[in-house]
Length: 88
Image (cartoon, rainbow, N blue to C red; front, side, top):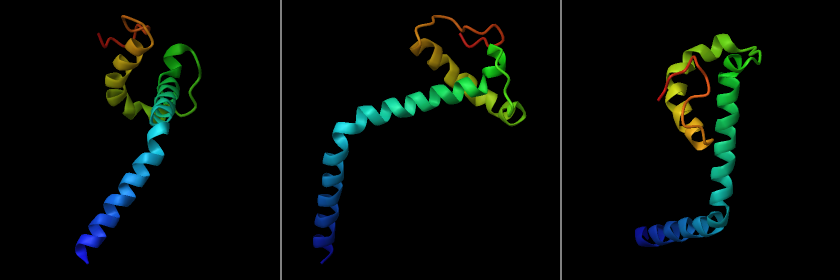
């Protein structure tokens, strides 16, 4: 009985993987786009765009600076485009 459950579980995992495989790149792209938008919202005041929730995003800055470096490199910028953030 236990072996049958394990076999069925493996079969369901394989089925799920087969269905999701063609869409993995699309899902990763969507997640990256959402992360880029979130970074824009968090750093919008540095770009001159008013941020209505800046009080709440201040505590996120230490973690966001680590991700900011990866973002500006992915966007093709060798150095940080913002003078207030020195990540390189």
